[in-house]
Image 1 (spheres, helix red, strand yellow):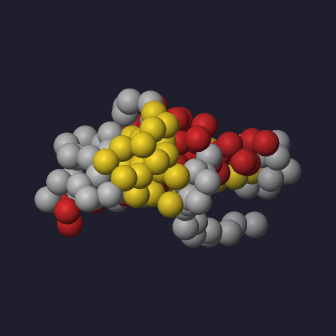
Image 2: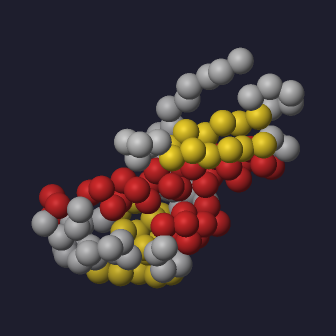
Length: 122
């Protein structure tokens, strides 16, 4: 039986975040307090390509803090890639904990198709 699932991600798992950064070729996140343009944020900081300020993932709340000045200080697509990869990595981690097999396929439009095999069916 096939099911389509839409996932709204909250970044709460530091290991899945580290794995996401590794898969995207980014430096590992560092837990710290940083100053964004006009505020401070504490959490796991990830420097995205060509972003002035890192994104800060508060794994206690799941909230991602960032300041890209509406795209002037960093392209939104870079953050979207990180959140997408995080959702994939977290899904894979949780599926494997349950003993499921997961296959991943990147589609032509950049989306990612995950197939989770539960028991004898996928």
